Image (cartoon, rainbow, N blue to C red; front, side, top):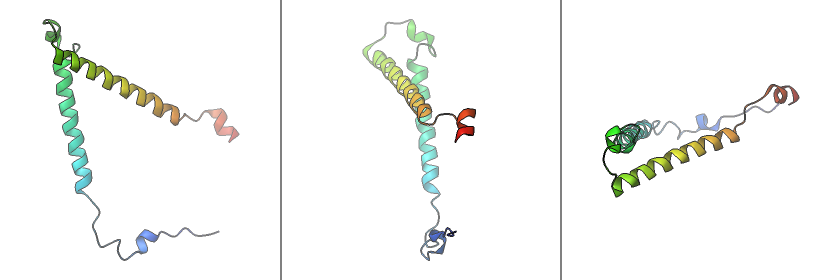
Length: 98
């Protein structure tokens, strides 16, 4: 048998730079900020979340917001469906046959 050699630990340059910690933190903050903005947008323009939005006649910006919310929700559901099709669950039959 051939032994697997981990070349990354043997390199003298691997310890030269520290592991990045700011990039994952920046990504987390960006995701949190975008999530907050999206939730505020939903609270303002979604008729389910804001019943007062149904009491007045919607303007062009309000209709555009509703279309944007609908499109984002549809794309999210399509991506969920597509990712579930790519990684099918292992059934008992497949487990025993393969």
